[in-house]
Length: 258
Image (cartoon, rainbow, N blue to C red):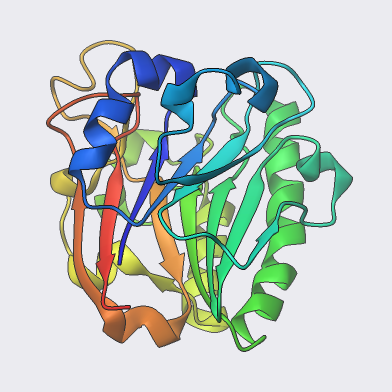
């Protein structure tokens, strides 16, 4: 089973850059998209966003042109969930889940705190809210693949300029500690790091549009597929696709023996 995750920074923008010409060539089973920005009514009459053979759902933010997630699946899901139970975050369209038997595939867009203290406070509220929920999911008998832009680089090897970013959102000590807790105490698994434990530059998934970040590979690894431990032995391959650019993020591709 091949699952791809991509923050597309506007699904219409990504489409113009060739996303839906690229997708049929990937032998993918599921594509999880974050930051769609376009709402379902904006694209519902354009067939490129609903290609034949794919089961597509959008979870829009209430605010036009903001946030939003979507899932594309070859197989029809048994159930679709799109609310976490916190109005602040559900209104921002940050979560969508497809269920296939005992397997859940989630598209998640965790808040960014980089635009200022107000957004960092929202991000911190999300972390406080989401960790107990992840503990519940970890123990509910289902297997999960949570795909998305988590907006946190975990370790020094996960961004090029780690020394100068230790006081910046996305690499703050308490954010990194939150991931430590998620992995080391709650027991979730960073799928890419199972396959590539020490990879640095090849693992980056986001590059700032400022300066020459892309050209110089001054990147961050902030996109993850985080899975329940029962899937760890099912991981077969992991890669970041960089041959084409659909966004300031790159597609993260994981293959599972499912």
